[in-house]
Image (cartoon, rainbow, N blue to C red; front, side, top):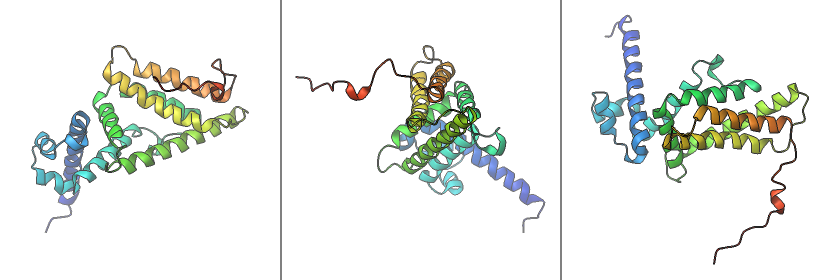
Length: 222
């Protein structure tokens, strides 16, 4: 029988081992993708066998989902209640996250690769990313709602577009930065875009581009 004194230590060792595997999987999936990232390579990084990794996570699919949750938990680890805030603090958090991501290319690369892969119907992370974007868009809309109320500004009908645009800009800038970090400042470019969108929601003005619905639709090339 295992003594009560040894159980907490064994639990801590198990948690450390799981975290080691998650970090290794993050590296492998980030560099090779999910489909081409072998469990044997992950196991070798932590001096385990293929069966040992499966003992902790059950399957490669489950390991992938735990990697994604691990990444998201790291983003909010220092926040109150481990949850992104509301109102203007949410947008400040997003900007801080962009500057933080500029110091952890491996995590950003893993997210970019796996989110792109997940658009295929049979990818095991598709439901995760669908739910993630749905949740984040709703949280950004809520932050806009709070922000407009605090500033006595009407909530525009375009707030859902603004929410989706902020997430798209952050993810798109990450790809540009990964491809050429010397030419794209991930933090500064993200801050500029988020500030511009928040300003447009609080103080909407006629666009210098005009109304897109009146633009001519280009025809097919001959």
